Image 1 (cartoon, rainbow, N blue to C red):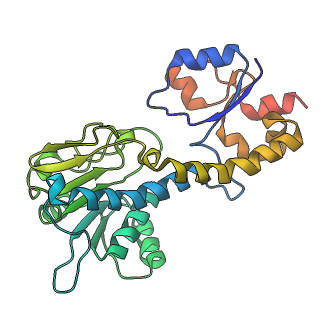
Image 2 (cartoon, one colour):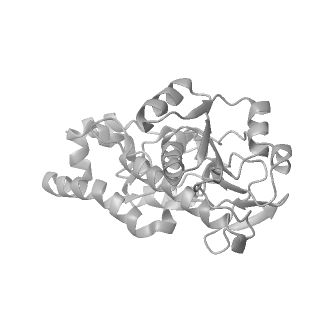
Image 3 (cartoon, rainbow, N blue to C red):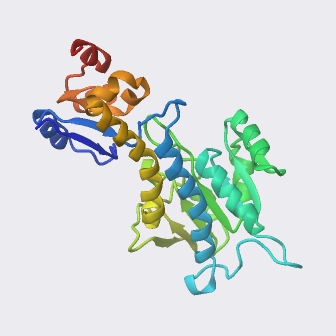
Length: 290
């Protein structure tokens, strides 16, 4: 009773029975995904996205090898050999770090996103000329036919990730090429994607290797744990000094964005709509206790 829980929310697998039990126990719950810092950004989401973006290129390099039924090519390039071609769909944090890793290895990178300002920012921050385009189906299909690696990392904060790459596009890709769907947590970017696991991470379809493991950072657990600790440790120290999460939320307005249960009251509007549960405004709850 009257405990505080800080954890991932995992909307896709959250059960209403769990939520109702937490409400009965008058728990205050804060979710990793929605936790904001004083710069109004999502620090843990960013850290996990950085890990996922860097990791996808290491994973792609592994599965391009002949031993893993790939094309038998080195991700990147060496003197006298044309660089491998990487297609990245999504110019968010995952896409940015995937592009950085691919370019560092010497690959040729082509990046697609419908957010032009995001593409411009990426051009400026990466520090070298990057091939970019809005998502135009015919152009995307043409590029996929000649690439070695395709990475899907589009994001959608409210609902399913848009399915951009059709089964027909995948069937036209070269045998032994690699698809990594880093958006599989929210449905996936590729029509042929199916959820896999760390124990059995890949499957073949149309001769193309599909890697569709959700929560890629969990495969690099020590780095992920350290990144989460960097955010949570100062928060827990401040909560201890203030008398708990509930008291800290009075002073830290940005912290309220991550709270979805406050002493048993559901304060997340989307959860209330999804599970047909009573919603209570968090600001009113905190103000009423002062």
